[in-house]
Amino acid sequence: MGTIGATLARAGRRFVSSLPALFGVLVFTFLLMRVLPGDPAVFFASGPNAGQEEIEVIRRQLGLDKPLPSQLAIYLYDVGRGNLGRSMMTGQAVAKDLKERLPASLELTLTALLIALVSAVPLGVLAALRPGSLVDHGVRLFCSLGVCVPTFVSGLLLIYVFYYLLGFAPDPTGRIDIFATLPPQRTGFLIIDFLLAGDLEGWWAAARQLMLPALTMALFVIAPLARITRASMLVSLGSDFVRTARSVGLSWWRIVVTYALRNAILPVITIAGIVFSTMLGANVLVEKVFSWPGVASYALDALLVSDYAPVQGFVLLMATIFVIVNLLVDVLYGIADPRATVA
Image 1 (spheres, rainbow, N blue to C red):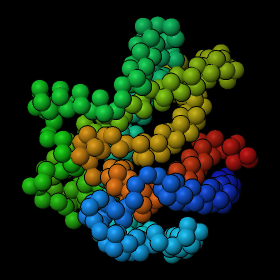
Image 2: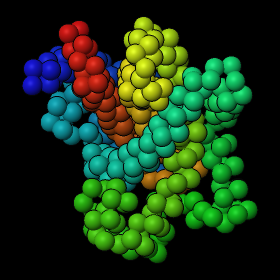
Image 3: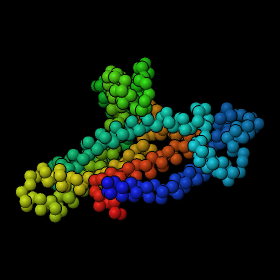
Image 4: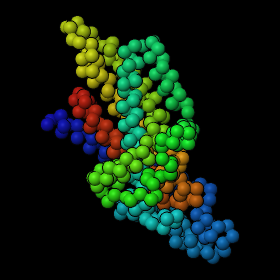
């Protein structure tokens, strides 16, 4: 109980210390959107041929006619009340748009991270057990290819092979076939909602639709996870406690799994948290290639038309998720290694 309390107290201190960073993200994103080229009032007033009077009306509606400090003060006040503004693209509140699209991005990112971890940790362990061997060189080559190939290239290749040539994958356009009946929304995760509804056919359709984009994202992040696993395992296997365990006659696989891997997994947890936050915000190319209705593609569409509110809301959401993930990593780190709670 004391260890859990110390871990939670440490996470609470980290959260409080992250609040100034979130405030800085708010201010920086607001100012950055204002200095970027393009006038949203011109775009949403029916294009560059719109009359000046119509443009001014739109500017007043968006609050762009006020001085910049006043705009910033109003924006911070609205955010403090939970109001992220209204999207000119969709005509809906940004908070509602993000709430509707976030489950799609989370479902894709979490599935991709799970695939990456299930693949990368065994690969890293095998490479560390036989350093310098063909297995080690093969793992390192695979990791290098995964980093070098951009996600949109690997995504298009997977579509070409598994959809066009082999016909195994469904049409890569969204989360589910447009003619399919959606389950009652409980979590927003289609593969979970279909299971809760008892619709196995719908679950299989959603899972098939998810596999190619998730595999595309996983291929890009397997490399850092496998490399950190390999490096950590090499350090653990060369440590004194492993040599002691071998000297007392413990089986080799027990030493590897119980002692070496448990100590080597700590850096992997840290990197997995960073990778997850990066994937969630940077999966826009995957979402575009597979027409996935997530928050990243939503923010990109808004950026292209200078729709300020969705972009600002997206950046704030990503910063908040990054803080939450770091806190979760701290908690998991403390559970895996109670010595970390003294820091």
